[in-house]
Length: 400
Image (tube, rainbow, N blue to C red; front, side, top):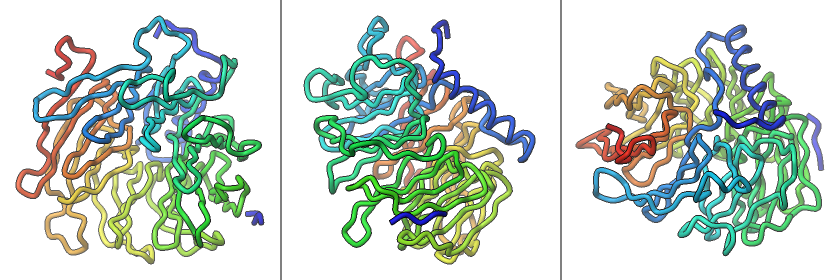
């Protein structure tokens, strides 16, 4: 049922992506506040961590595996592709966060390929794969990160061509007969969950729509039109889809039938996806604020970080970790009645932070636009203590 509702020659598809980013920048400058994502990049240094290993999709077009530990610098385990001469495996850059699922590491690349790597060796020629097959020309970039459906064992890969592709995670074979087609680019990483035992995915598009699809069939269940581009990852919360739009509004839609439960308006775009602690919703905005809302969309508190927020925040036991574009990391008390909202602020160099944050236990992993990766530990006794900083641009891989 469908309810209406540097030195390398860039490919045409990549230039289209750059043009899109520039166009969005122009729109921000003219229609919003002048606080914006700023400039064009080949990637966001996005990362994930699993079993003591940090996997970074660098903005320069590498995947790097780092062994986390007690030392002041992590140990490099492998890099993919292993050499710059391996042009057949060129990533060009990574915007969306990689994921580890079904024994593989999945990375969506600016080159238009989805890679499934052996997480222990960083290879595709043994257990992994790359799609699409062969060397097709003019592939649209993959800006959004992949998502995994455990019910079907399927990886979903949104594309700049407006299509959502599905592959069996283990083999890389097509899952659907044809990809799902939206009306425009998809920069929104899907949220995956179940409703009444049915695997579902929710995501947004540049066509201003929020889509709900049945993952098993690839069929659209419903769509809902907002007033702007929907680029952030939706949040499934208490039977609702919480999703922000470039119309400055945060929407709460019934996950089953798309009915509007409430909407909340900020002062700029909602780009980064919201997160929840189970009772409240924390929604970052390009106006620099984090808005804390209850289930009914009523504002409980807000905090001004002083700069636009593009990076999706994370929750750790000590509080809510938020990074703004100025390279500042904040630990906030997430409770309703706190008398001291900011627990600590830490400036992580001068580089911008646009990639989503990632947390494991008390540790927060941050990728910055200068290519550095940091582990910052957040505990009640010692909030926001930098444990290590890795930067491949330096001979010793340390940041200073």
